[in-house]
Image (cartoon, rainbow, N blue to C red; front, side):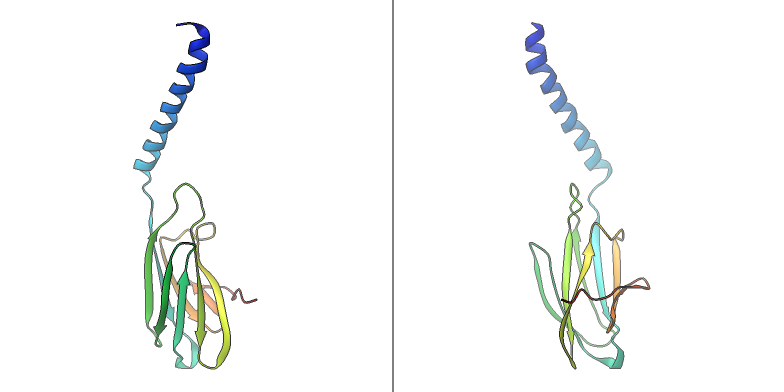
Length: 135
């Protein structure tokens, strides 16, 4: 084989095969995690909570949670990009506002079981409370 053939054909092909092999090894050793998000209605005054969650690709519909009830959904995270995002709208009787929050952000959350409680001031993840993202 001539040096130019080796440089233009064989080396790029070997590099491509190495990248494919490494990707396969990484995927098999770190399978995509299944993420579970659980939302529990802990609103003060025993109010019902209406929750509507979506991602860029999925609309999970509206769910009515009575006091103490939970709504749960699961999904696989985006393995190659830290871009998985689910956002929810929350409303309850006596408050005309629709409150928004990114209930799962792959860039922010490290949990595989993300259990949220919802209060009037905002959602809480394992005791750490956040403010609503209202406009």
